[in-house]
Length: 336
Image 1 (spheres, rainbow, N blue to C red):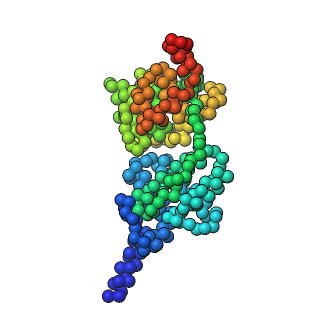
Image 2 (image 1 turned 90 degrees about the vertical axis):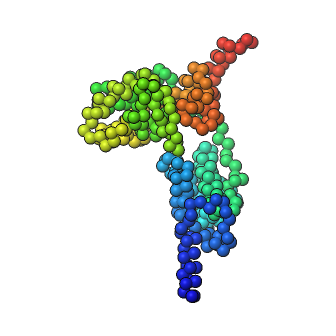
Image 3 (image 1 turned 30 degrees about the horizontal axis):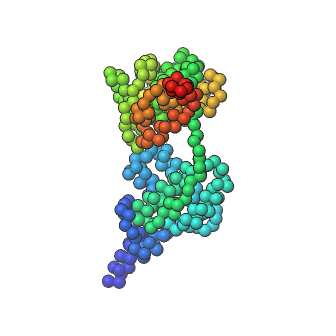
């Protein structure tokens, strides 16, 4: 009888420490159980959080890595401090000390704000799971980041970059189709590299885009982009080995292009065109939205095409070109 009780107690302890149920629905843990689970490691809690982000929030691997990097910064703080605190024993005062420590390491307010946001989400998860009773980050204020306007390319600059593409090379037509698709549809780089042949609906003039959280949206695609994709297809079909028959843009080995490769293509073309702006594939997305808004497009329509959950995210494009707003006032206002 005593042996069975001991075995039950050991199993209960091990279960409390190592085998965490995915959801507790916010139920509070018994004090005795909480005492044992205070030994929950950073590694285990981070792993549980990753599972939550992947399965319940359907976030991309890049987003999940960004969140876990934020948690590792907090873990590093306690490691360097020598306290050995686990994730469940972090207090509001600890967080204030962490913010001061992290601020000394990184003066970039945007990076600080992003890190605090990631840690706040982590502790919100632990609160939902019933691992903690209070979120130590709930009262922590993020630093003011101000309005950072994205870099935008003019139409002439985009044309200049396209003119630098050597169409005699096997990848020339592919790179031209990439630029036209990025700019013509306002895609994220992650959406571009996962674009499939079957996502292009030629008859309707739309493309199915799989964005953040695996959410799909329909985005109009221009005749120019469709033409360049058609020009690229024969070169694509002549690749020696095609590993994924449905992925649109492939490298020379017939595999899906990486995000890093798209960055390299963009930076190389910008350098050849003599463009000194700090640009990336995302610059074409900003340019797409900016040119639409400047042309008088409805903000809700732009929001839908970009796949923004909130209209507030899209509204940044109304602040980019002040001269356009002034010209509009002069042209249309009766007192101008």
